[in-house]
Image (cartoon, rainbow, N blue to C red; front, side, top):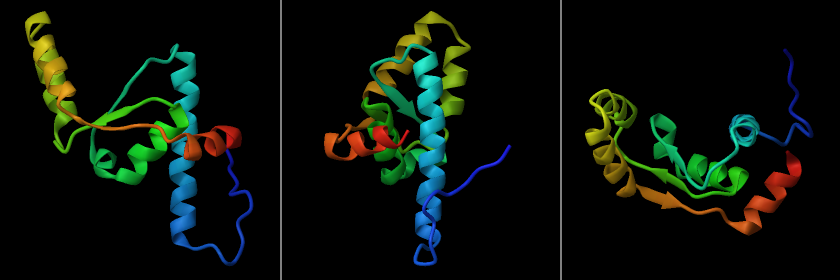
Length: 116
């Protein structure tokens, strides 16, 4: 496997390289998203879910709202609740509805989708 940072110049610093890495991950997720038949919302959990940059980037690349929670252990809680069956599945859904939402910004989304 190999990769390049297209257009990288000496004027670019760590912030630009970090942003390029996040974009690469978002573009890879977009390919999986399309293969899965997409959907109308993404739920972002874990450490990166606390990053407004990541949530905004993901919303723009996928062109769907991204719901996120500040609960660091949301994935573990969701897995535990799902293990209890359909009755607790409603609790998971209700909890997810209380999450904050980032909406795609067409001004930012179009150039990102063109770059894919």
